[in-house]
Length: 281
Image 1 (cartoon, rainbow, N blue to C red):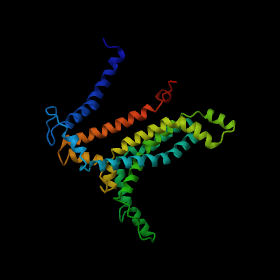
Image 2 (cartoon, rainbow, N blue to C red):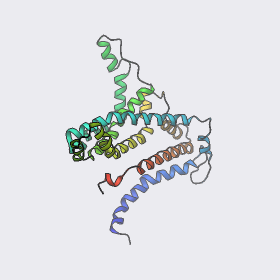
Image 3 (cartoon, rainbow, N blue to C red):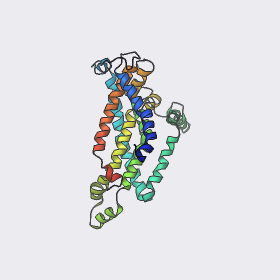
């Protein structure tokens, strides 16, 4: 007989099974199906993975670009978000987490709408170009449809995902401990290096991990702002599932990316003290 807790958990378990595990099982099954077929669960082949690891396959170029963009996004956002998170904690104290929620409001608007807004702002004869010409300048810089603007779009899009966990991480630093260290003569740099940064690291790491996982699967930024000047791995997966109608190949690429992200996530979580973050000790 199931306990009361187990019975209460059954609806959640069923929802996770249908909404999370079932698609993963289907993708995994298709990854071993005959290429360019829909023989799922009726055939088994490693052809799709062999094709991915063929040196002539350019899909790894897309994967490297995606990883590079994701790493740069994390690095830039860490530099941008940390001072903001620190300022929120210094000014608002215990309310900093609530105040940082305001940075999430842009997520209420579709990402495509926000990115097309930047296109209208940056495009030739658009808002920026037209305003500069009206002021007597020659016009705005040609930045659309370049790798740089793709990176800018990712930084803009994923700022809330870095800022919110980082703000919560800094909120975990006891102010009494910082005050005590200052009273004992510790300098500002020493306090930041030995007290604030180590204690806030769980929140910082979660923000970095969340941002990296989202950024490595980014598609809209490369399409809308970058004009596909760079092909990312998520675009290759989309093409395999749509125009190429090669679901087994798309599934194989999805499995490889999922395994990479899963291994990275498990490694990062192994370095975090979740008990301390949840206040259990």
